[in-house]
Length: 331
Image (spheres, helix red, strand yellow):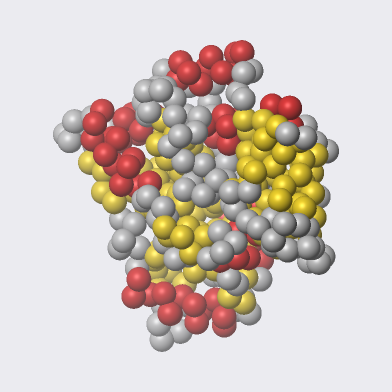
């Protein structure tokens, strides 16, 4: 039973009666068919089919809420800064819509995110326990909640199923002033606070990319290898759809985000190139320690020649030691 306080989270509300239709025209998921409380993972794309943002989109009574990686990211060295994708998505929406149709509101700086695992969610009061199940990117759920009603300091917010961790994760979105109250409540039900390093270890095990760390606006959605989770090939037209559909039909994506298993005596560095002979065949984007000494797990891009499980490559650490890398998935 664990929980993690996120240093930042991107939260963009898209309000108005046309919010779902507008978002549907600019993202890879079918969000028009969502009912209140339902959500889906999606890439927001530009006219070239490149990735403006990677979010989970939830239907609310007054529009949509888009949630994703915040501007304070984290790698093996520590906290790093990256662009706030909510800002970029809001500007993107403004560029292609009229304010009378939908209004984007960036709530990233006014809300706080706490992630809890499924065992912790199961111990919470209803209705949070009701969504304490495995999160599927194509069928996510959200609920409003009030917890700690039997205590002097109850707190309220919204909870969202997120496909970040194996087995599922629940994101609590609350007001900043309720952070300590929420932390005290979670500790009272026997949850332990974990670090951001643990958060990222769990998402790396689940092969979930973090926007601003593993992918950015230079990447095509299919390069994240989330087609089944976040791309609908039957929803109809949207911005950038021609590029994405052509790649699907021709199968010509040249690089994919894969999971690398690493063996080396020193912690490998983010950005390390991996080679097969003299050819660069991969690059590491996120790295996490494992229980065994000298063993690490990473996300990183691989060229077409190294998409398959068991593909091998070598890297070189800053201290001159070799890094053995094998494409694989967590068991």
